[in-house]
Length: 303
Image (cartoon, rainbow, N blue to C red; front, top):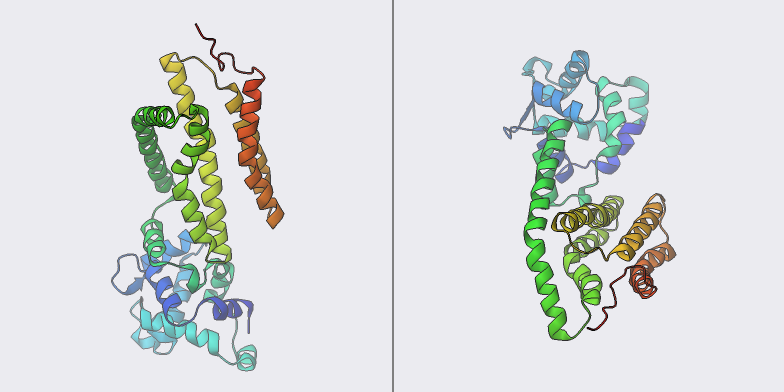
């Protein structure tokens, strides 16, 4: 059995997996895969398929691979399932003696390793990925830019009441505003990312772990770069007194440390403990730098 067939046997089983792949290819939801849909989907997978490749794939799949006279250049789910089921279950010796590698097999060999297991897919993720499968790279980038701009506007809009709320909370509790800003606020603002990361981690598979790290690294990058740039802009435009050198220095150090850790392809448990230790370290470092007088005005002189 050839390599691509072994991969299919492991990753594509009749039922949910094949149905999911079929739905991903069926862009107009008419229960058929026609030639334009097949071309667009092959291109979205990064495969350079010319007309000869597409004709070969349609010829192999259409009519279930048996009734060539019934070819209508549209692939139904039954034909799709019959093709892959037959390719997976054929006898090894018979296939090695009689069958030659097909055009579809060569294309699938280049892309099938990227097809996830059935357990890796949730219904919500299926619908979300299908929303973007027909978009070009430029369209996806434009959509991401619009979403990012909208998020920046929301951050700017709600930053002032959030600061006021934290100041009132610190005054009522009798705790320094420093601890509220750098201890309580991060837990509140990043609770959703933590819960999402835990949910991905419970899947215990490569895709779930990748999504978990992507969520955490993305959150750290946005909090420490984009949100910081908005804050610096507010300080500059409103002419506020600059008392945040210690915070910026520690943020840059922690971001660099986490970024270097993220370059590793293998993560050990002790490395996770080291990354977690950066949080209390950053709080103590900021406090120590301010006590040393890095930011003048931190200790207000009574009048």
